[in-house]
Length: 132
Image 1 (tube, rainbow, N blue to C red):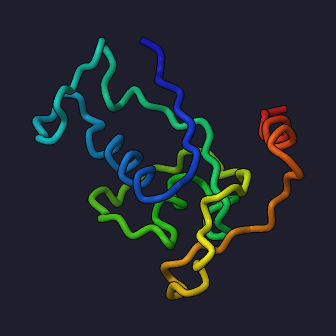
Image 2 (cartoon, rainbow, N blue to C red):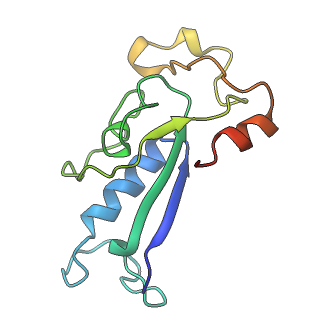
């Protein structure tokens, strides 16, 4: 079967757990508890291939997804440290409403550090993020 080509919009705690889980359950024959089903319509966790990722935080944009999932302000439990280089660079996303107005009140390690919005509107974001 073909791979499940997957893109992530936001490389936060949920994305970190998802990527870690994909590699935690990489061996389809291992008896590791946690998944409801190891075979879902013929697909397994090892069939997931990360092909695109977007974020707005300067500590993540430009890094490979394998590194960005561990960058601050992410604070999810690390249960799978060994993530191979995924050749999936995190691209700049469109800054909308994901940065709270009280962001600066958080400690440095827990706040977002958004890059300036490079898109003038959502249409431009759609067109500029398409692969050439």
